[in-house]
Amino acid sequence: MHFRRNQGIRALLCSLVWIAFALGATAHAQSTTGSIYGALTDSTGAAVPNGIISAKDVHTGLVTTVTSNASGEYVIPNVKPSDYVVTGTAKGFKTQNETEVAVSANQNVHVVFSLAPGEASETVDVTAAVTLVDTRGSALAETIEQERIQNLPTLNRSTYDL
Figure 1 (cartoon, rainbow, N blue to C red):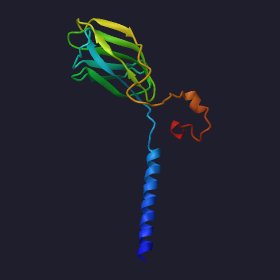
Figure 2 (figure 1 turned 90 degrees about the vertical axis):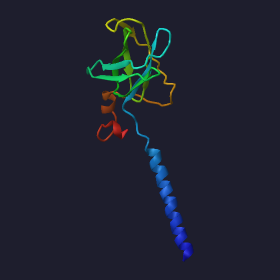
Figure 3 (figure 1 turned 90 degrees about the horizontal axis):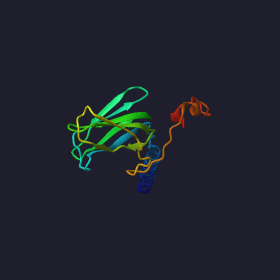
Figure 4 (figure 1 turned 180 degrees about the vertical axis):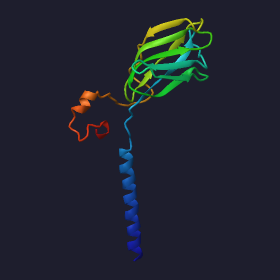
């Protein structure tokens, strides 16, 4: 009798462990956003703390603004896939614009600013040559266009059914 009760508890524990592993394997969600990260430096390469970095979606006009930390680093998280103009500025430096910054789903785009001394009213425009490989981590992602989703053989044409 004691043996059967232990066997039942053991079977229950094995089942719970199996379920936990099975749910854990499927819990990796796909991200629908990306991020823009980098650093603000001056012309000598020194960090520029408390700089203001803004990312403007060229299609919607939505602007997201963050401040660089004491090391001059910044992260703009949860950026929707689109094309952006990223602007970096700080007191005593010229404003620098990085144009043509494209963010895809689950992509971390690296944008570094090297600010020149001057007034904030002076602007330097740079066409972005952003890093396409994110060296901070490994992930595989692809942006799927609306037309491709509509042509997929799914029940309700939802990207979450993929």
